[in-house]
Length: 61
View 1 (tube, rainbow, N blue to C red):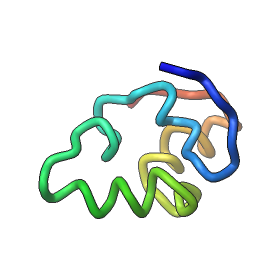
View 2: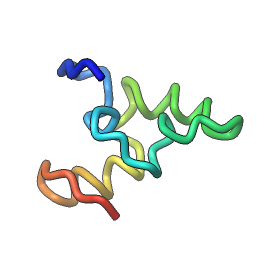
View 3: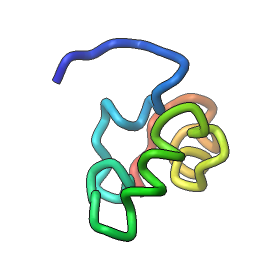
């Protein structure tokens, strides 16, 4: 995967956590993936748990 830093994409997308909406992409996750994995990632609970709570260090739960 091409690693490109952008403020419009969730940093967890590059890490491909198995719980992320963009990895699961089932019919119930598509809307969440579009919403949370792009510009709104800072409001995503998965982002908050895995990134913000660990002061910018990725942590797999």
